[in-house]
Image 1 (cartoon, rainbow, N blue to C red):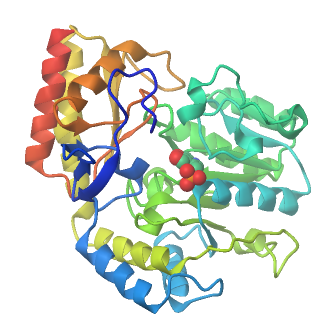
Image 2 (image 1 turned 90 degrees about the vertical axis):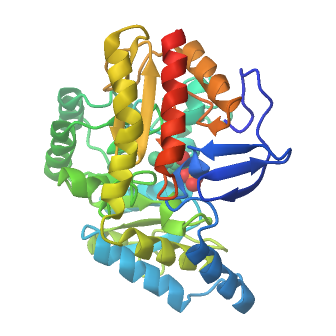
Length: 398
Ligand SMILES: Cc1ncc(COP(=O)(O)O)c(C=O)c1O
């Protein structure tokens, strides 16, 4: 996505960001609906985050040992998300999911991992099977460089198909089932409640570890993430992006009895030079405090509707064929399909035209039809209104 493949415009070279604005190296300004792929819940260079990170930078940028601010963020995460009794900080979402899988395998003594088509869990070898995001653009179902033996223990099932998951899990003892409860790497595709409930029931019955990958949805759709919205709680949760407030941090957390397998208490290895980096921990604490201000998520939801609803209405008029999926601060307009509940076959060419139309007019949305659009608390109604008008103008030309 950084390289703008297949697009007629040169890739964006970012110079600075402020609020919802991003400025490129040539001085053009864009309203940013990528927000560093969801890491920036408060927009660019939020004063509170900048102040805290700068203060910490003067006191040292990394120690490779525990800090009080790491403990503070851990306390905040475990308080806000009751299914997380213990948490381990790492530096990227990829590491968080990789750690969760190793923990699940260490806990159960089994090998099989079950994932779902179009869900992306980072770029560790075992998870590059029918993955979403940039991997969707690859011809092969897995990346080159991943030996068959490495993915032999990974099964990928259709997303949102409760019966297929039930049948498979009853006949295949799995170490883990990993799922994006709100998929956001094939465009935004929320799971149905019955799908998540089935995964919860079947993993409980079979002894598999249920992992929610909330690297995108965590703190984005509410303080308890997708699990709070659905009322379905996993054994392990992966967090990333927002938890580091725009700095490199992620986390894997969950039930104490599973987390206690991690070294040094247990025998499941995990390590990282920059894990729990104090700058990222400071930024995470500030971001979560800001997100707890009264009305924070209500405002995000309202702003998302200001964009999603008129586009939906325009699709319903029938000139442009498509639909919109949205959940608090996440949305995707899908061209060429009337409803999306699983990996969609899209009109990618039409989306690329929309991207270029918006980009040339100062609005930066994801260059790929398989990514989510992200709003932040910094987006203003004026910026959203301008974006809405441009999208509607494009749709009326279709
Ligand atoms: C749901 C999900 N899980 C995991 C990852 C991997 O995170 P990272 O890019 O920080 O390695 C991503 C990245 O976009 C993601 O969207």
